[in-house]
Image 1 (cartoon, one colour):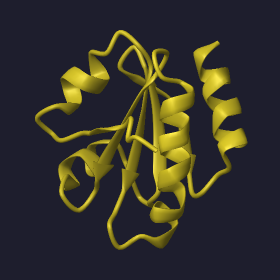
Image 2 (tube, rainbow, N blue to C red):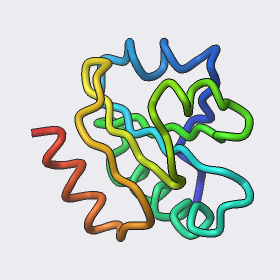
Image 3 (tube, rainbow, N blue to C red):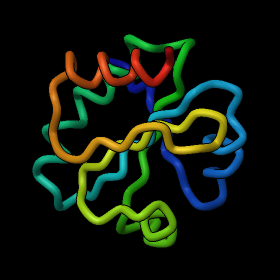
Length: 109
């Protein structure tokens, strides 16, 4: 499957997430995190399913500790849904595609 998510850094986060005209899902993850690796294909599937409606980005918490701290990430994987620059949903742990899709549809409503 072609990768649809963006890699986000402290240099791109504000423009790509906080100033985005469309909702953004940000996956905070770590290379050493087994649950993060289990969730990764689900996040990519979500990016493909919501392509054109939602932007999906990923933040490696080891590479971007300031972003993780700024958004109160205490556990990975954590998905934050931003709309208009504000967090409208916070999802912690591995979830199914169906669960994530339903929560994202709710956040878009």
